[in-house]
Image 1: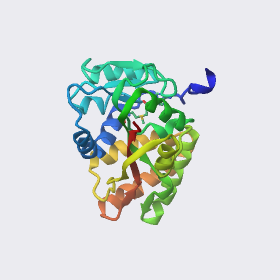
Image 2: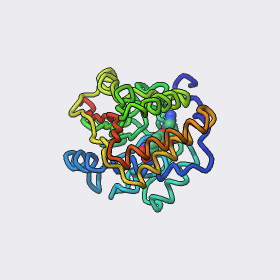
Image 3: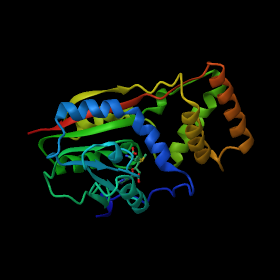
Length: 258
Ligand SMILES: C[S@@+](CC[C@H](N)C(=O)[O-])C[C@H]1O[C@@H](n2cnc3c(N)ncnc32)[C@H](O)[C@@H]1O
């Protein structure tokens, strides 16, 4: 059993408002989700599941009661509140889904695979619980290896964040590996691409949330003075209209073979 379950997650930053961050990320994929769900014909009789649902940011934006699963009990409890008890939620592991074979028409994830030590096994599990001909979708997986930071004085920030992700056990390049991963799991690829998250014009609020995340990730590893200096350079570049921050974030819509 041990080889098919996940190692404990790194401890969550106490006091950090993850839901706010997840809602911000959910906005980046809202159009894409609407488009794919419409193409698939998601409706009241569809059985759909989000694996790694976190605090319910995506589930709370989905009009229908989609099932949700997350490995962290605290997140599942929070998701219950954000979804107003509409969604059947379970605390469980993506590597050992507690559902029978062929249970769902659609299984999807959103910023999950980069956090898994064995993403391919998670895909096998998603495939197992999806009916033949059903859909398996990864809506957002970043590729930090192609991150662009301008002006050049901000390049260290990208490297610090990549190191922070690795320290937390994440694969910062998951987006670039997505198609190969799905193909390797025997899932037919219907459509894949990059979502548009290029931020020439991030709002003040978005930047504030981004910086809360950066500070939570870097504190204790990078001297505070260096973090604050970078924050100042970043804010100045935004104010002067010179900032470019781009992390290609990939999606993949796949289908279980009949
Ligand atoms: C970045 S969050 C994304 C949450 C949600 N999908 C969203 O986009 O708002 C990743 C989530 O994956 C969950 N997770 C990590 N490893 C998992 C595993 N092995 N099984 C199930 N969930 C897992 C974490 O607890 C966390 O809530």
